[in-house]
Structures are given as C-alpha cells and as structure tokens.
Image 1 (cartoon, rainbow, N blue to C red):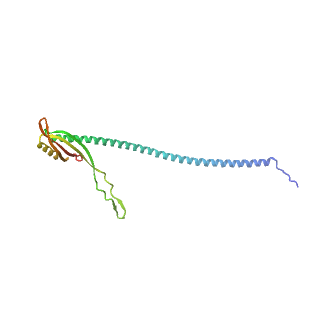
Image 2 (cartoon, one colour; image 1 turned 180 degrees about the horizontal axis):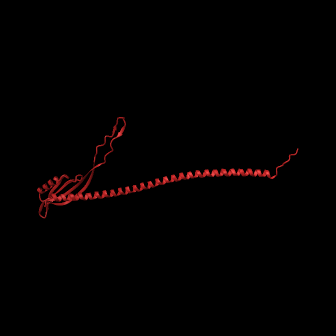
Length: 217
C-alpha cells in the first residue's frame, strides 16, 4: 500500500534550520557564559596582581628608604672616623705642647736643651677572661657576659739631651721632673763633661714617659 506524504517539501528543511538555529543559540549562550566567567576570573587575577604589585612597590620603597638611611649611617661613620683621626693628631700636638711647657717650667734658667724626641705608645692592657659558661638550675649551659672592649694604656715616651752648669742644677732638674705625677720612669742614662768656649758644663740624657691617661697636672 502506497504511503501518501501530506507535509509540504519545505517543512523538513524548516525543522532542520530551526534545530540548527537553536543549536547555534545554545552555543552562543555557552560562549557568552564562558566569556563572562573568563572576564570575572581575569578581573580577579588582575586585582590580585595589582595588589601584589602594590605590595612589592611598598617593599621596594621601604628598601630604598632603608638603603638611604644606611648610606647616611655609612657617611656619618666615615665622618666620625675622620674626626677621630683629626682628634688623635691634634691630641698628640696638644700633649707635645704640654710636655714642652712643663719642661720650660721645671728647667733652671741656666739649663739648655740640646735635643728632644718623643713618640706615642699605645699598649693594650690585658683583661681577665670571662668565667666562660655557667650551669643553670635546669642544667642548661648559658654563655657568660660578652667580652669587654679592649683597654688601652697610652704613654708618651720622651728622650731629652741637655746641658746644665753643674751637677746640682742637674739634680734639681731631675727632682722637679719626678715631682710631676704624670711623668713616670724618669731616669738619667748618662752624663759627661762638656766644654763650650771655655765653659765647663754637664751634658746628660734623660728618659721618661708621660701618662696620657691622666690629664691632671
């Protein structure tokens, strides 16, 4: 028995086209949803990156500030080192001037200097070591106090050669040197007769040290 087709020829084509349009519509919806999700995720990633960048920028700014402060501290340290060197040099001149003024004070008018030389000596004073380790109640070893800074003993070593009219003047001069409490180890190493234009004198050499740790007179 022959089947009869009552639907028009364009109807199946229309249904196929409708199905394709619907499929394209769903694909477009999926694409829009995907783009929306991608935009949201991208926005979150951008905000996260921006926050991280701001944090890194803050850290960089703090590092630059700390570096600038470190440069200032280094410059200040160099300046202080130069000042210490200048003060050390000036201090040597001050002590030398003090030494000459004291010699001029104690020397008799008839005595004269032939030569005078001196040098500064810095000696480290040995410090007793710390007790080492102490054992607490819990039998735990703890370090003792940190080692102290080194202590320096500063001396001005002087060598004096002069001439005196007599042994009495020389003895008085040595006695005056020994009365000065910042003069130490006063000792005459040698003495001999010296004739100058028919005048007989005593030429002598005296060694002593000046205490630079005590600034008293």
